[in-house]
Length: 135
Image (cartoon, rainbow, N blue to C red; front, side):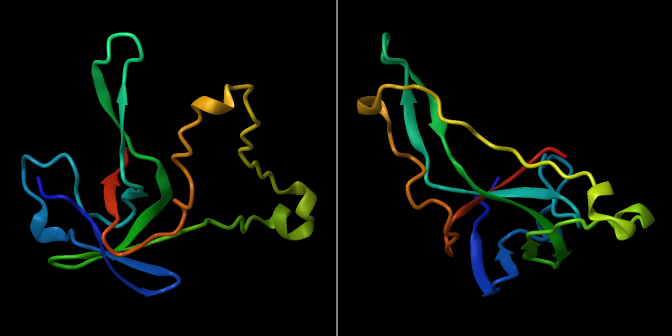
């Protein structure tokens, strides 16, 4: 399977990736369909077991989870789609709208062992790798 990447950034709301409907095949576990969730990821960092030194895999921090909105033959458009609550109760009072936000509280860790993997990883650039997410 080919590596999927960011190939262009037309504006602040659209990113183009090098995967379209002609890339789909019957053996592929990924697919370019409207509504499919993807993630733009940072360069990976090799992770090894501290005791055995065995390679355990690569940690690739997620820069942003996005959604495919338009599919063309050889590329697709991905965007940051948010769904606004348009129910009657939400229009009557914002207090009746239920929203939740994830907050990640600090964990007491040894500061000398912090890898600083996420340093400046939120900026998406041409060439960044893209992975498909399960719905």
